[in-house]
Image (cartoon, rainbow, N blue to C red; front, side, top):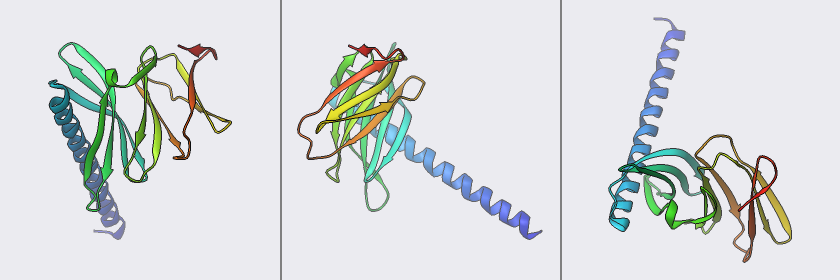
Amino acid sequence: MSYKKIVIIIFVIIVFIGVVLFVNREVGMEEQIVRDIKDRYSKDISVSIFNNTVIEDGHIIGYIYHEDNISGIGIAYFEEKSNESLELKNCYIDYKLTERATGVYHRSLFTGSHLRYFVVISENPELEQIELSYSGEKHKLKINEGVPTIAIIELPLTVQEYSYSYYDKYGEEMN
């Protein structure tokens, strides 16, 4: 067998193992979310992750949940442990979040490394942009197309007050 074929086979095996580990990790996260929601809200649901954003000390997850004929969205924060395992620290379903515009929810989320994030999840296809204002500055974030979607903005811990606005594709503020 040639050297080139051996390298290709090894590469394929490594990629396969990486994909299997990633899928297993997401399955483990989904199971932790389901258990947490069942324990806290007495709900039997299924969960599928639509976004997994890696941050400094863990992962912020956007997920869709299904309960009977009802579905919704939520966010979760997993802290990464020294042994590379993930531990669920915070989990919120849509009606436990602040809703500012129809189908647009947000939460200020603190993580283990004492960072704070402004997390927005949306199932509203009209959401185009978020504007977050603090310390006399405006920070704009364009939203990716597609529903559901998640936007994560790091907030300095020194910020005590902030305001936010959501805008549709026509530049109109959403209420």
